[in-house]
Image 1 (spheres, rainbow, N blue to C red):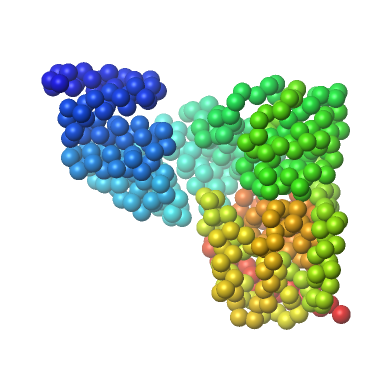
Image 2: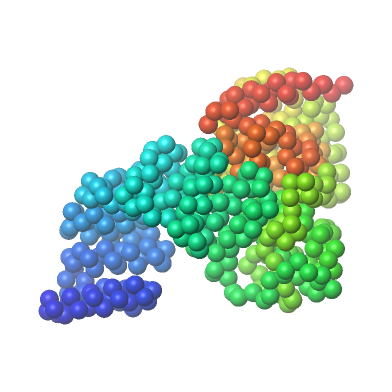
Length: 488
């Protein structure tokens, strides 16, 4: 293949690539590389295609090979930074962006991307500085404005965050990520009227599972169902499903026959929910139905405000037989029985912020008259071997196969202390006393500067006063726990 033919093939490949015809583009890039194995642009762009189809390791290998051949090409380093960030190799990603900026200091995109990875690492002030630098270079950069708005929310500058996200939307009115982040700040502030409307944009996010699923029949608009079958689709995490299951009886009250699609671990727990006729798994074939609705759209449809949250003291209950079994097993325990969860699921992007080391429970562990019960599942459960001295921690979690089992154990406890995980939602939904340990700037549902929750009447919130300081949070919890009269 002559140089002219190589150039023509590359031009055609780039056209296919820009048109989203990734398989055709890949084929053409490979044709070039068959003739010229060290063609840096072909290597790099083949790596970009690999990144776009989720082959991150291949993308990193190809992009790195291109950089070896042509190390002074700024956008090679920037795109490598993106692939490394996707692989959660954050330090390497930041180094790649910084190299791109050494080669091209006025690259607003690389500045913005460096801001993203710095915020991923928890370096919010540095990330904010990079976003501001990107905006200075390109004032109409909607993505940088949106990222800045999100970061401002994460350091508690709520009003500035809202203004900044609105600025992003003035530049890009259909920017779903900016709308979604704005919704979370509005909800955090308690502006549910505006927040729920903006929250509908989550369905348009570029990584939304709704874009990958088969087309659905008509979306329910909240009108009377008159016996029609409605498919309610769970989304996001287990805690979200538990929290928003409270709206299902309200759907049934509008004449709906409900099929609920939700996580398998919740099937037995939610089987008795009023109005739910059938529960299916997340990957089960679609059943027959008339209309559908995403679960987290129900508060928007019902016009939910802070003063109209359906917050019955207990809207979920443990299976009576399972609960009796645990009652018999724990009958000999005379101390105050406290369940504990100190960490969330490791796959959550914010888990390092919401999870606490088990060692931080030393202050409450020192209080006499407490029998501790681990409700901790997942990788963090291995920390039990390093529980604080004197903590009488009993672990029955091997017997907790789903949330119905967990609910039955919780039903026999006096109190649950948990970080922001599904178990805290479960205890609240059951009307059990639950103390929620929160990071400095917590998730939207816990609002601002409150020690109670309108979602769960039996919940008490303990917030970090300084970011990352779990020791002080658990010291306050210890003082509260010490004030509970001992069992007699």
